Length: 204
Image (cartoon, rainbow, N blue to C red; front, side, top):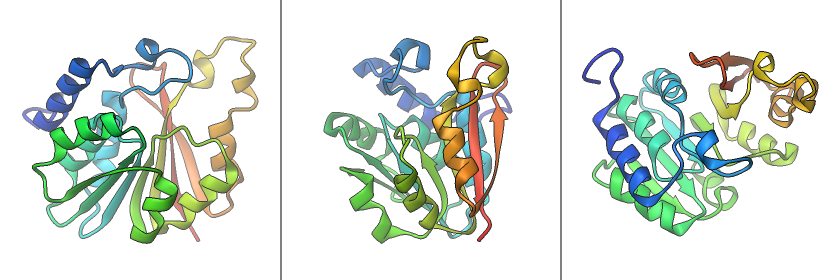
């Protein structure tokens, strides 16, 4: 990074690509249920985790146009490897144009369920593909080394939800983390106080 509050050059390049192809940079731009880019707060959090993956492997589900992957690649050690999967061919191509100069990064086009398991285990998984199914989530946790982390973003903190929101008592992503006995987990609220992410560590 150029400064403490700065954005890595690779992330800036990915953000410029997102604007050029019309990929939303925020959940508000995307609208309900549609994909959007990783927020800077999420990116910085991912960078903190990626920086400790010495000699490790990182997986990302849902590359988009490469903003999350750019945060990860900018922070991870030189001996770390990142594989990121995107089911949309056009988005994967855009991400590859951003990340293709880094030999540590591999952008794969297709379904993560067939592409990623043979490449594990992983030291960090960023699950940015809208996972809601307990069985799919269980596969992801199985792909983690003991002590490794899994992250999901695009949540709204309970305090920022409308009083009548059903997510106050039952949010599908929180349920996934809370019901997998192999994980220790917590919720991290981002600086704007309107977005949060979940992070879990495989304990067994």
